[in-house]
Amino acid sequence: MLVVGGGIGGLSAAFALAREGVRVRVLEQAREFGEVGAGLQIAPNCTRILREYGLLDEAGSLGVLPKSMVMRDAVDGAELTRLDLTDLERRYGFPYMVIHRSDLHAIFLRACRRAGVDLVTDARVVGYENLAPGARVRLADGRTDQARIVIAADGLRSVARGLLSGDEPVSSSYVAYRAAVPIEQAGRDVDLSEVSVHVGPGCHFVRYGLRGGEMLNQVAVFRSPRALAGEEDWGTPDELDDAFAGTCREVRTGIPLMWRDRSWRMFDRDPIMTWVDGDIALLGDAAHPPLQYMAQGAIMAIEDGWVLARQAAAHRAADGTIDWRGALAAYEAVRPEHCRRVVTTARAWGELWHLDGIARHRRNTLLRARDTYDYSFIDWIYGPTALTPQEEPPMFSPIPLDSADRP
Ligand code: FAD
Image (tube, rainbow, N blue to C red):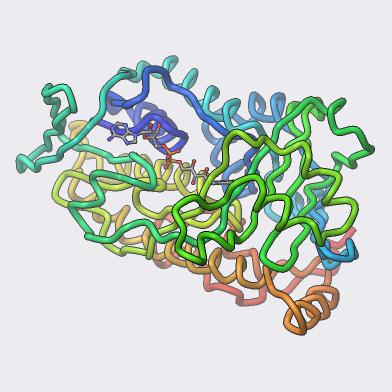
């Protein structure tokens, strides 16, 4: 098998498949395997998979297990709603973790090495071709490679996606600034026992600890007026400062720490329900890049690899051969609908977070009325990853809470 792209999606899928005895080669365009960026939130639907892979303890030793997630209004700083992450772990059986993305990436890289995955860098794939059976990829330097199955985990601007759709990334006109700095640089008392999200008009601000509390991670996201005006040069640091000028002191004191030399313009794509073309399949952001408001992008990619590996195992005959067409069909039967829900819900959450005026006050009233222990809006996300469409839970259908479960 060939996996194109050595991000968190590609490496985690390569590891999952190697665990099932599949021979896997990863082709990564960069000179070295690595991840740029800062923190990642890893919800129970992913820590469950890390536990199964035997990687959760290693992740836990590098990450932080926060006690609560608190949403506040970015203008007046008032608390709107919270999740008790200790209770959440009790409900779903697995912890909510925050971890530096380079640490999680490195965990999968080491796991791939141990599992014997062939890891190739400097290999940019520019073309795909089905051979029936099997598929071939063409590299930028003219070389070719081929395998029984090709998994394209080549991210938001996936080349392989062009086989299945003529769509383009959709700009949200929002941009993210990040910072992961030693905690001493915070210059203020920060409660690292919580993941904190301040939501405001056209902006939000996320903060949590990393590396056992040695680092502070911050994400500042805002709508760019210049993007809305159709200008090329948008999302610049002056727009960052303007966007957060009207926020509460707690948020404003965090803004000077943001890295100003890089930013991430935020794109997603409209959902597509066909991810498989012959013996070539999409995975991760290549298939379903979301806006990051639900913090499920990397998680969905890890879930994709887990489902693919489980389906490969389920379609293995007594002589060890795998019915790959069957496995890919089973993968495609379950994953696109789940990811479609996440991608579209993330868009809706973004709209809710960024409301202004009377709508902002109405939102705040509704969020304040939410019971801390009401999980009806997240059960469908944080529960076990479905292997079949029948296992996929309905969205927002309240599962009665057992009051005895409350702390
Ligand atoms: P990528 O990370 O894009 O990896 C693609 C890989 O393929 C790269 O290594 C690239 O170099 C390689 N590649 C690309 N093209 C080629 C080619 N032609 N040939 C060979 N190699 C190629 N997700 C969460 O789960 N939790 C969070 O808290 C979270 N927070 C986020 C915060 C922000 C601000 C943003 C922007 C995203 C966040 N996400 C989060 C989303 C998450 O980062 C992505 O969904 C995830 O990294 C996607 O992984 P991937 O491996 O599919 O794609």
